[in-house]
Image (cartoon, rainbow, N blue to C red):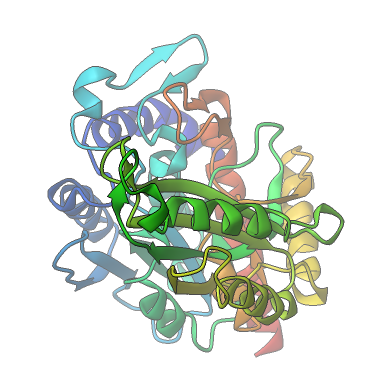
Length: 383
């Protein structure tokens, strides 16, 4: 498999360039659908059949499995969307500098899309049973919370023994064994407008009310417990000389254990249940929508298998915890052994300097293929 992948490294990079040079932000439906069409064609050539789950506002989701697959026990999840708006590619298209590839979504996670495809192609040469043991979900809205694709991921994951999430490896090459969960809230305050100079006393400032709430919400953060609450966006008012009649805040919540969720949710709602500025009204919408991906005895066993595969290839596989969320939360919360960060290595995701380490492209693809082989053998032994 290694020889096969080394011989096709240039081909892999060419496909990566093609994918990166397509704007596929979460709301750029035509771009995400274009990515899906390209990958569907490539997987079809490898003997896979596809099921397209159409969406109206976001890109279509894609489920892939080998034409001879009967009851695959491994699910691979990868997303096709990026965080970048339409027009980004024109400003900074794919480029290579030294041993790094740059471009919007190059590592998060278009490199992983290529890696999954070529892991399957490599496996087709040596282990047909492994490619029949895999079901792949390529979703279109991970960067905005997977609200449309979550049910699809959970449905596809039923009766699976293992879940591999191919978000990029960390900068030091580590795979991800645990992630924070979390959610988002929108807080809307209604006040009473008034002229700031003539009748200030008649106004009831929604911005003032939201300022009180912001301070109280921020204080819910408890670093020692792995909980953060961040009021990340505020807007309100109509003019500088008018008491603001409305204001809105966007709140991000992160946590490391699911049993923290109802506590945080209750605290947020209690803070917003009582006005600090008399005469203002507060509305709260939102929830803890993404469970944490917790490191447990099941994932530790899967991690052990991955590390063994790495050792065979001469790769030291390390694991780490990260505060960012991913679709691994959904499979993990279903009780399925889940490991994330199985994609190529890179860094600076979601920024103008996002990059992929090209010398890890083949290496991580080979690791993924080897892990699939080992997991398939384990499934057979326990069947």
